[in-house]
Length: 290
Image (cartoon, rainbow, N blue to C red; front, side, top):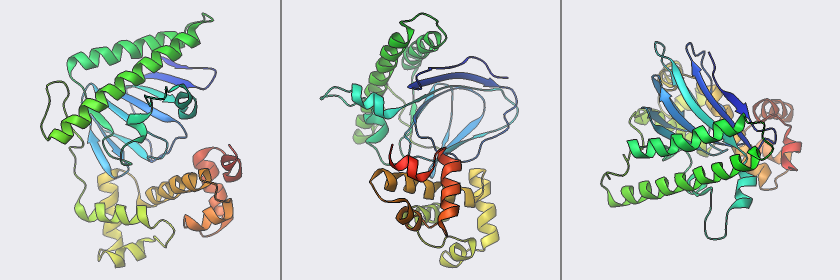
């Protein structure tokens, strides 16, 4: 069952408040937009890159458009969350010279420090802004889109304030009463982390199970089962989305499509074209000129 799904016709901000009694699962994916995710209820582990975050009520997840991710939802409880997707290019243009509204999304290592565990006061503040954005999303008043944008900017300012507190807490090496500092509380086995690091840094090479098994002295069938056990998905999907993520970056930097295909480890251009369009929604050439 889904509740309260609204989108902005302009495509700038898409808001959804969803409650699912039976969740059918989702594989690794990669967005062109940035995402703010507020966890309400259920039993969920959220995988981002090679980190797995166990979620509790009030946890806030922030992700940029280069971080592959997937929720692992355990059956038995209703899964409820509030999600906002937004176009970073437009938000970036709204940032004043002395304050980057996207700071907490881009100024951190990829796949690290995505989760902010909020205290009660912070939860109430975030929910107040989220509900305001939700109500404005379904409003027919002509000025609603402007009010929605200003409310969203308010949310981004507050999230960056929370992230600044979190950064200082981590630098001090101690917990703070203003925020529960928590990076990740589910540890992927070291062997698997090493393999995921290797995939990330060597996406242009042969990454078959045979090759990975030989390099890391692990049976390829056991590797496949181990990856599935700890991520809920197969290793081939992870490799594909790491390659797509790299391709997006290379194309954005001005590389041509054929060179990008080779640099990302695709065995032929037609396969690259098909997989990129399926994952991103547009062809590599159209993505390059955007």
